[in-house]
Length: 380
Image (cartoon, rainbow, N blue to C red):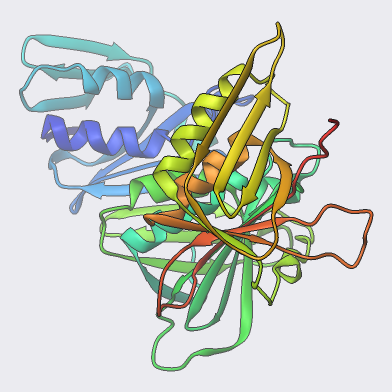
């Protein structure tokens, strides 16, 4: 093998394919990046049996061939090379030689024959706008659980119904839901299609394809090897779906919203950040919503105490409740509007605290982002 390639293009391509690889892979072979040089340029790919990333870039190929080289090392080298074309060759001894200007690196070649086949996706597909999809992922993925004890809660549930795509995530204490348009072609799907995607993988997809125009979303496979693919331009990311039944959290969202408060999003977020400084990590923050606004009261250790109030408009009776300040801040960051509506829901169980519903305060447009947060029990 021998090829020449632009340094910036090559560095960006290697960085893209290694992003989804775990920092520590139990199988050393999966730490490699597969590089294929042919008539159409270079193809780079990485795969760890759960997620894969592939891209194709232009290059001058003198001798076609395929090599496998340690991905993160190659990425670090490529990002620090001088501003000059890169030449990569594989010598007679099998070693990979990279030269760029006066810099020269010799890297060990990994056995290509032992590398698993990169998954191909050819099932049902549709298009979503890259910027909307990226925003939707950012608004939902943070609510997924980080505890691997319950794998289904570590994912984001994607559901396509007709010309709509919804994203839902929960960790039992909160639920985030966002809906966007899904272009499934001339005919809308009659049956819904669902895919439970690992939140970590989906977050990287959102970052990678944020400015990529339309993204093709494809569903494929069956049984234990169901996968989903995201393609934009010359890049593709695939992910193995999480097996299991996602909890039916949609039914938790209330239909009636007559008891609520409206508050400036930025003002409330800044106040919460300040007041919660005195709280222990797991302690709730006391909120009182009244006709005079919303007041916050925090009592921490070492007799530290903080209070603050911000303006709010209340419809209904005064409410006092405890909320996890970090969970609330993440919701306020996802609202994406100047004002936030905090709705106080009702429960049929008088002994159970009812969740609060957090949505953007907008007029005349259907709500596409919803966030349910379970209050904490106040002990004082």
